[in-house]
Image (cartoon, rainbow, N blue to C red):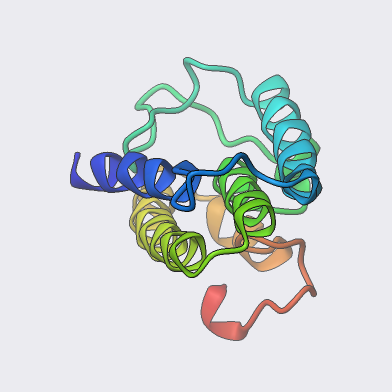
Length: 146
């Protein structure tokens, strides 16, 4: 549960207009792809197959289609795209620091989730080798992310 609370606090801090101004149109550069990726992810992995906590659903199935064909954590990636939009939209040090905090929380949450997925799904080890963590395979993925 601490991961979920930290995730929502991170999202609140990222979205908060620290300058008191509305975001600039640059925010759309992160928000629109974020929305598209989130909807595509939900289309391929509907609610009921996953949980908000970093523990797989006991009766869940491993999804390897749609964005999951390229990225192991597309929902988290969509939140990071949203954060990027906030950084571009607010252009403030506070939004940058909040986005970094959110990235750290989502990275830790995803790593914890992957430990569970490795236990639950025998195919997850091979899937992990073929796909990227938050970015598609080959886009800055290191051996440590595998």
